[in-house]
Image (cartoon, rainbow, N blue to C red; front, side):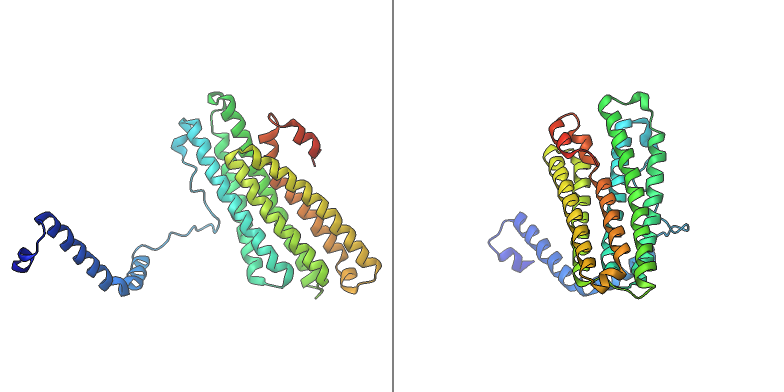
Amino acid sequence: ANWLDSLNWRPAELVIFLHLFYNSLRALLMLPSVGLMARFCNWLLPDRHDDSGVARPRHLDPTALATPSLALANAVRETLRAGDLVESMLGHLGPVLEHNQPALTKELRSLNDDVASLCRAIKLYLAQVPREALSDHDSQRWAEILELAVNLEQAGDLIERMLGKIQSEKTAQRRAFSEKGLEELTHLHSQLRANLRLGLNVFLSADQASASQLLREKRRFRAQERRLAHAHIGRLQRQVVQSIETSSLHLELIADMKRLNSLFCASAYVVLESRDTGALQADGGE
């Protein structure tokens, strides 16, 4: 105390700097114990696991149903969560295309169960929203959320079916794609993931520029899909053995990715239908 009094500082400054020094020193001394404390907290407050083994909705608050705009906001958050799970499924599909990975296969099927569970919950939640209390804008938003939830559920099922095809025709029969064929599928798969992310962004923001870009990406994907199908036929004509062995699977996967892309890009039409009819006419639908 005598030493502090000898410093040429005001009393208020002494209090501030003393606490700053003390707390900084204490934090530095306790840093090595952070890992131990984290393990102790995890033991003290363990995560609650769902006995059914599938994801449960986090944002569908029943008390918000009395306020339709708030209920729709909750449904949007849950739908985006389902979209993130579908993106995770697509991420797992890439390594499965290249290698036989049973662990990823099991994880992918579990994710599809989660997607289906969330989408069903979203549809039931929307069914409880009083439609007569919705404005025209909210009524349109209600339909958008429902459409995307249905599309995501269909996308999850389609990705799981793609996995089954890969297992039955490639893994089980010990066949492999040709190097060029695998490169083409991987490239198409990357485009598909990018379009899903863009589609979710368009759904959230309703941005016209992003919606127009999404339609351009859809057309680009279709052109790429046709080009890759023709390239595969060319390899068959050149009698490339690996291409012949996996021909049916290769073409089916390309067609499935095209269907997935259409599901992911559907949100663009809602944004542009009343603002940019020229873009819609140029796209020509499916």
